[in-house]
Amino acid sequence: MLDIQNVTKSYRAYQALRGVTLHAHSGEVFGLLGPNGAGKTTLLRILATLLEPTSGTAVVGGHDIHHDPEGVRRAVGVVNGGMGLPARLTGREVLRSFATLYGMTRAQADARIADLNDRLELGRTLDVRAGEYSTGMKQKVVIARAVIHDPPVLILDEAASGLDIFARRTLLDFVHATRAPGRLTVYSTHVMSEVEEVCDRVAILHEGNLLNVGTIPDVLARTGASSLERAFFALVRPDAVRPEASHAR
Image (cartoon, rainbow, N blue to C red; front, side, top):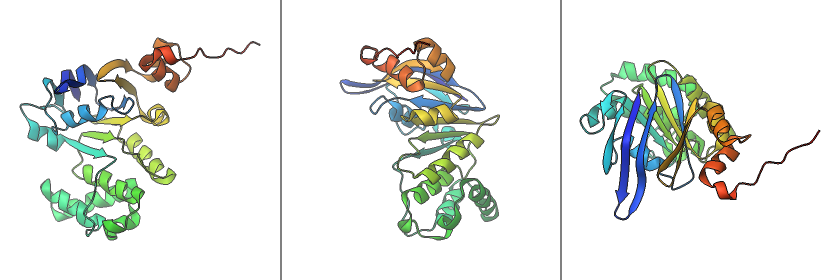
């Protein structure tokens, strides 16, 4: 579902990505973990064909980002923490508008909206203008908009940022439900608890370098850490990690 080969991205003297190679498979929720500035968003924008890599390539949902960018765009849905909505439109109008862009009929759009209403608990967002939304309401419609065409690959970049506990729970439950054959969700965050809950495997990025890819037990075994947070620091800042306290019996 995702094949990234030696992707680099440079902005003059600054190198945002340094030869990233990784793979993710059908049926996975694949975590992308790293601090701010690690290169996560740059990599995801490349995968969504919003940025051109300096070198390297990727195949997303069977489509090459260089040779078939339109195919990539049809195959992905993208959500980040800063996406906006037209303030004068209701959620239903936003979703119907995007459904039209993907060639869906009104009947198909309304059936899909009903399905997403059940799964994302859209509720009153469907018939209230977006200018009146809370952060959580807005993000639910942004997610629904990204998946209105039922894409096989979903890219979530800090999608839970700013959400209250109820909206965050709905999002994480939705991510759980995306785990199915023929589908892939790439979940980027710096919140360890979210990764531990929803991700099958995780890649850790730091300063544009890929430090580790594996299941959470793999990461813990490699670092000898007792938690993902400690394992993360052991990889990213090994000199700053204090030994874990041992408890004599």
